[in-house]
Image 1: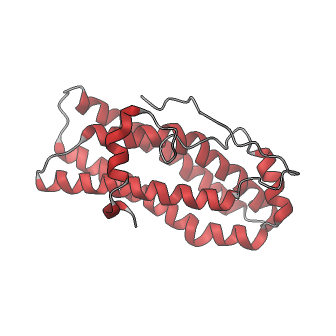
Image 2 (image 1 turned 60 degrees about the horizontal axis):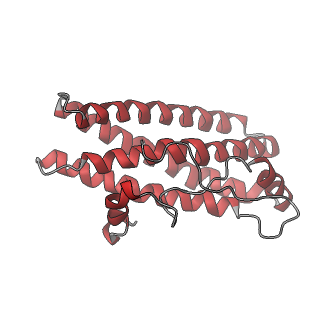
Length: 204
């Protein structure tokens, strides 16, 4: 796995530093970037459905990114932010739903990663299984992000004030890591994926 869990740089956040990261904007940018990756996976799904050429290495690169960054930075930051939202707005049911969805996304990412490993190691995998896992993965990721964008992010704007975000910047220091793909600090192994990312057809 080329990304691993080695992060290049941490944002230095403290409540008195005026240039602390805009955390909500960061979460929104992460969603935009993940949407691009899901569009790339959707294009591969279309190739599978029509019997076209499928780039399994690119698909694996996307899964590696999701495991190394989304699950070790993006979702942990969201979990911390949502706990504060739940406390401020008495929305424990919503936060519990999101925590559970994050766990579920981790499980389906691992399962699909295992399937792709089989394919890349020339083990037989039924095409119907591959298509179903890929389509379910895309659907669940998109549904989760859509719920956050349409329901949760507006609530964050409504209930959390500047002091909350300042405290959250402190609490999330370890989780606020540099994006290993959508930045200049990127490894050679994923140049093909990055080339696809630059393709305007994958940007919503």
